[in-house]
Amino acid sequence: MTYESRYEYAKTKYAEIGVDTDKAIEALSRFPISIHCCRAMML
Image (tube, rainbow, N blue to C red; front, side, top):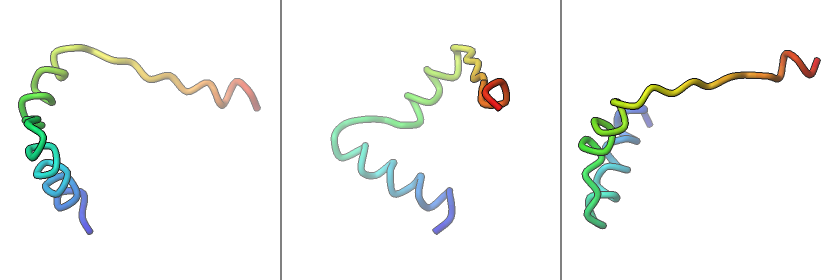
């Protein structure tokens, strides 16, 4: 299964409960996020 087909499957499941995933991704894309990895510091 490709990432695209998994997304399409999830998109239909969320649509069943009234969630527009494209609209949600668009809304969230306005907020910058930063993900830090501190595992290297623990080695």
